[in-house]
Amino acid sequence: MKRFLAAIAVMLVAGLGVTSVAEAAPNVVKMTTIDGKKRIKVKSKKLPFYVSCSKNCAGKLTLTLVTPVTKDSVSGNVTIEAGKIITPRFPLTKFGLRYVKKNISKCKLKVTFSVVDLDTGKRDVKRKTFRFYK
Image (cartoon, rainbow, N blue to C red; front, side, top):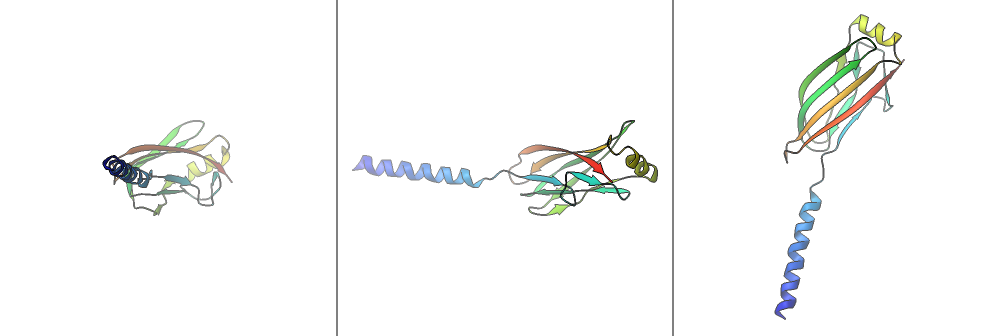
């Protein structure tokens, strides 16, 4: 009888440990365009897209515009609450806008987001490349 009760106690403790591990879901970081397509529409001096996290997170967001001639980058620190969406924008000059439109098939926007989950402290790096269309 003692062995039976000990076996039940061990199964209960093991079951509780499994449920607590299963509850800790990973932080999901999503980056997408405004219209949901794979490419960003070039129509204004700012190139927008969406970034969201499933948990409270903070990190460094780096945007790099790659063209046939040069690379330009902008970076900044952001904090995102769980379930909220932010809209970072890459700024362009008039010349930059015309240049991207003329070389639209050769240009791309690279996004790197180094994320830290504020609850657990776990680090993750999410990278995405967006192409352009007129």
